Image (cartoon, rainbow, N blue to C red; front, side, top):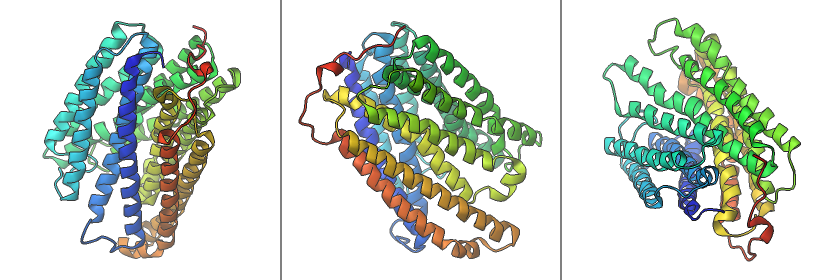
Amino acid sequence: MKYASQKVAYVYFAGAMTLFVVQLLFGLLAATVYAIPNFLAETLPFSILRMVHTNALVVWLLMGFFGAAYYLVPEEAEREIESPLLAYIQFGLLMVGALASVAGYLFGIHGGREFLEQPLWVKWAIVLVAGIFLYNIGMTILRGRRTAITSVLLLGMVGVAVFWLFAIWNPENIAVDKLYWWYVIHLWVEGVWELIMASILAFLVLKMTGVDREVVEKWLYGIVGLALFSGLLGTGHHYYWIGAPGYWQPIGSFFSTLEIAPFFAMVIFAFTMVWRGRRDHPNRAALLWSLGCTVGAFFGAGVWGFLHTLHWVNYYTHGTQITAAHGHLAFYGAYAMLNLAIITYAMPYLRGVQPYNQVLNMWSFWITTSAVVFMTVTLTFGGVVQVHLQRVMGMTYMEAQEQIQLFYWMRLGSGAFVLIGGLLFLWSIFGPVREERPASMTAEPQPAE
């Protein structure tokens, strides 16, 4: 760690991991309800469990992105963060808002808009959080060295702030509501978040392989171009059934099929850079998470997304367990694994120790990833059966659910292993360490400019 203000990232990573555990616990409870329908029905209805599960996911990923930015921007800009105090205030506001939202959900207090259930004051607090962050990081970048990594990262973060404003506006017309609702839900995760993902991944590859910056930046610009080209108009594949004009069917179908391209490019980029660069970086676990992230994103967001993105397929699969399969692997592969990669990389520097518990961390990778993949395959098969029974044969929803209970039990079992893998990860990065960081890690070799 070169700059004292990078320590700000530690509290963000700690907060992200706290909400990560909350997400896993409530996800396991929600999976239990699928297997045992009346489980906690009077105490915590499924709608509340799902609400906490999805909202904790989004907030911990955002918190991880903020921490990653506060860690990598000083190194890229070659100067301290503009105001560490503002960064801590930002964290406090975000954490209080997140915990207040969760507490409200548990007592049935929420906005009722799916995935955007936060109370209005929390949404405005997030606007304030985004403003503080953009000022802090923006001034750090503008007054320091500017690189492709920081430029793309800042562009992605600006997109996060801008599109979040549509979460505050709740039109009375349900068709208009859904139109703008997707501006947040889609253009975050399939648009601007991809820019953040690409910039963080480029930073990790640059640091761990020693490949020339010029080569990394060329790949980065190419990936960003593909992400923006496909992601913006690819939003149209969500407009099929919400009352939007008919021309969105061919536009959405065409551009959403192209959304697989940036994820495939990330796979080629990461593995090519590792192949071309040195392979002796001491943090092997961080490299494993980084490479795994690109593969997981390609299959989860790319392949599984493509499987049911065309409107004549989506007509049958929309809202089934096939959607859930795509969502779980996409979020885990593209964004959860990315955050776990940057946390694995940065924590030894933030704590001043060597890359510790490498084996435990890599066991966490294989257990968690295998469990998510098994869950995805299980939900895919369950979804195919559901589509046939419910939307081809004409069974009611509950009749079809009774026929796919086996798949829900299998999903519950895989969810338990995801939780185990997550706890192993936490122990590997926050657990006790007896050895100081070796001198070789005090000043990490820098790639050629």
